[in-house]
Image 1: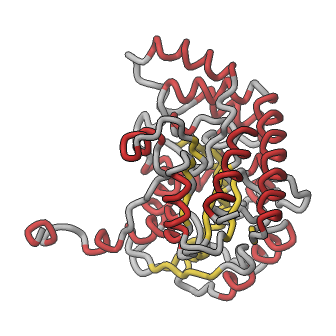
Image 2: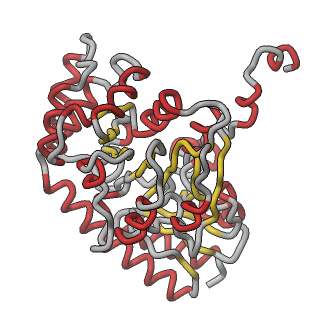
Length: 366
């Protein structure tokens, strides 16, 4: 280990590797439980559109060929869908990859990145990889405190990350709050709106950040096919920003970074508006059921605009996690986010939601 440290970059030692939700197969192996439901990774329990499945089956016959490295047709589809130009779009191997490119393309050593605490871990990773300081601003009522984040802007600030809705809490910031922030962000500071759960939002107060792109502001909006479109296993996301920003991101983008199958599935998903409608309806129903269950048990939870809920069990989240696993239910612990009594649970099918609430009642002694 000593020899390895002699040539490794010191900042790499500060990185915390991403800890994904425990997969079903691992639980089956470790615990000997075959009937397992996973409600830990914010996946869509309905699965992808039948049109996407058919497109994947057709595309897999072509995997001996490299994909279109420019994602030309998918960009054209997205441009029509969002009423932007194709030059304003970049595709990534998940929106995580675009976050990485943002760091590589724009962050300089010694600059500062402002983010919330807790929030999605990849923002901090991008900063650390590029020797930038992370300015962490605590959440207020489980929600991004944009006014406090604006107060932390200095002449060293390079980027501001905003997950809306936030992961892990599911809360959102409003149009009014975003407008107030943008009035205080100076030119040359890039504001990143990570909207992975955009399609699940029900609140009419949610901001239209694409208008900021159309105004030519220093912003980028990140969205994904992993969540409501249920293509998480294909890893495909995208960013929308003015052409200059996209140009520099393409300078550092890996060739052929989005697979042929992923491109085909994403295009087919956009052609099935029923996918979004079905998933939104199921999610809203699941959210109401889980919230009613939490209220009946007497548990505090954050108001969610995503496909998961952040709930305070009042007990050690690791102990709750282990007890739930023994009942065949996988959730996400809050201790990894610094909230040791909270868990994050993804909305599942009606049967999965009922099973989770019953298991949670048992674990909490009700």
